[in-house]
Image 1: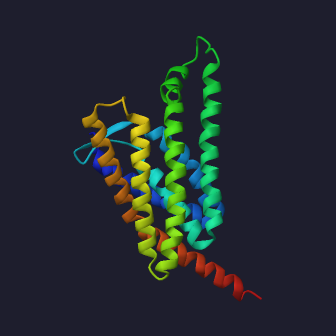
Image 2: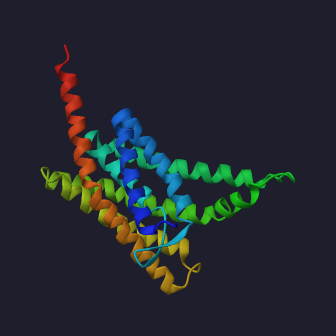
Length: 233
C-alpha cells in the first residue's frame, strides 16, 4: 500500500524536529552547528524532487531547510548573535565545498561496472544552478533572519514566539522569492512555478509555526543547564 504524501510530510516534520532536539540535547551548540551544515546539503538535494502535497505541486526540502532557521534562532537566543552569523557562513561554505567536490567527482570516467555515475550526474549535474540560487537566497534570508530576530528580541524581550515566528516567516518569504526565480525560472511553466512558490512558502510557514515549542524547550533546557553549572561547587 502506498503511503499518502501528506502523512509522510508530517512524519518527516516530526523526525526533523526530533533530530534537531536530540542534536541540541546531546551536543549543545556544536549539535546545532552540525545540523545547519547537514541541512544545507540535504535541502539542496531534496529540492530536486517535485511532489504533490495538499493539492499543490511543490518541491521537497522545505522542512529540513526551515529547521536551519530554527537552529540559528536557538543559537542566537541561547548563545549570541555572532554565533548565529558564524553558523550561517559555515552553511554557505559547506554548500560550496559539497558542490565543488561533487563536480570534480563527475569528471572521472566511470568503469564499465559502475552504477553510480548516472544517478550522481542526475543529482549533482544540475547542482551549480541550484547552488548559486541557494547560496544567494540563503545569505540574504539567513542574515535578515538573524538581524530581524535580534531586532524583535530588543523590541519584545518577553515574547519569544513573536521573534521566532515573525523573523522566520518573513525571512522565508525573502528566501522563497529569490530561490524560486533563480533556480526554476525557465525550467517550469509559469503556472507550475507559481504553484511551487506558493506551496513551498506555505509549507515553510507551517514549519515555522510548529517549531515554536522546540525553541521554547531549547531555551528552557539551556537555562537549566546554565543554572545547574552555576550551582556546582
